[in-house]
Image (cartoon, rainbow, N blue to C red; front, side, top):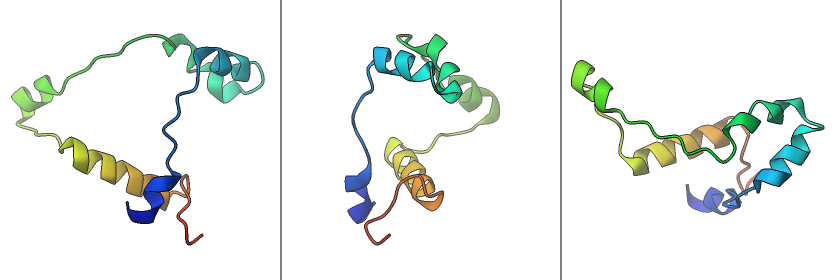
Length: 79
């Protein structure tokens, strides 16, 4: 990630802020039913049935960050 890593926010938005924002922003409304819920999933079935193996956490995080930069959702210091 290099210098771009400093641009990524690590803050957590409180649920009440999301609910308030959803009053004005329809894009947030779809997320409201998920607030406060813990969602768990595994890749066990895909590994067992398809022989698939997931990327390492580190590789997945770097690939996600690179995609966000490429899509212009996170700006790099040189822009």
